[in-house]
Length: 282
Image (tube, rainbow, N blue to C red; front, side, top):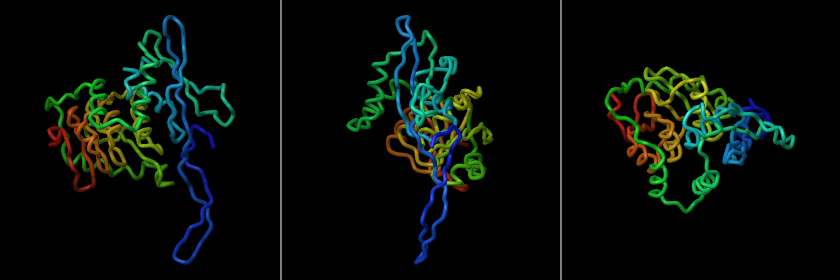
């Protein structure tokens, strides 16, 4: 099932309740592959390279591509990406699942190095220390100058409007959300996806494309747990405060602490845990 705005699809199920079985139609979250294909200039010639394939929920694909390239450090600003379009030279069943991203002509790109980096991230034999050192080479520490603090009650209020806005999750129970708030706790943007990392990439990309700087006193809320990769993306995007309804991993808290990021987990209406950067909480 292809489609740029297809969050859900119907599926016939058999529901068991006690000794009774009934057949009915349910909704499931759509998951399809998205291939990101880079177009870049090297040695005076335009080249292209298949960068990565991610399993995502269709919709806001250009936000996803923009956010992915930014969070991975391939581009430094929206102006580094000249344009995006769906590839037309594909099989009918792949339509809408391949995005071509054209980079600024004088942007320094090493396709071989990109390939090595993504291979390393996808491999299994990398220890936590290696992963921390790898991302530390790319991301600077976030500022911790005391000029911006968030009241604890503002943090506790963040999930209040979340349920009403999570349309895909409300239909299926199978989509993650990433939400951007301003310093007062006002919701600015929300993106959903079957993959947690995709939801965050979509959010970062949407903010950049709409001229909202995620580095400037913004809060990001995640509907699930926090892994190393989620903190890595948030740090690379300059997000100073990362809040989650679920638990963080050991590598997530170590990286957040090293980069001066405020990391909060187990957020509920009356409590939360601060794992790092609690100086920003008043």
